[in-house]
Image (cartoon, rainbow, N blue to C red; front, side, top):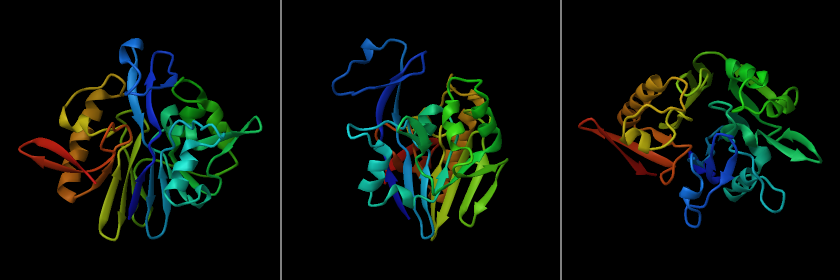
Length: 256
């Protein structure tokens, strides 16, 4: 199994829910009062049978009008058209923006040859337009244009790929476990977004069910340590891919 963190950079986001690029080396957080600062890391995983993308970032472009996400995939040694599975933890904009790309004034699928896997309830809510955390136009642009697999609850997508309806960060959030030749890779989306959330227990205000999300982080951390999972941390500042250890009721994360 090969794993690639496709870092899309750091951003600040305030009440307007706009994501503004933030360079920790040159920008001052005090100039952006009331902002939450996040880091965005989609992931590419190559198994014996599939090239898998976990979440798709914000969908921002470089100066050549190219998706950063596409360029990062090429830098990893693959063509974006080789991606066969796009596994979505949920559809908040910072995770789903890269599902589409603007071409000639229209939004078109970024991964037209891939099967897109989303919880049915999450897809329906995203299309409803009831929350500014979701950009309805993204999902409308995908309808009828990609192979869309809407799953419900928890189950096995195919041999070696399981999904679990977790529902802590948002009601239809899901997590994934990949098993390939004895290796196990876990993607927790925003239920296990960064190592720091393992190292200190807290209830996050941005979670739909903060107490459940906190309990899930503990549960996933313990399982990761016991079963030697490689964990993918979508919002990590430094350790995007790591192994978890759990000793004397304390976690630590070692980069891989």
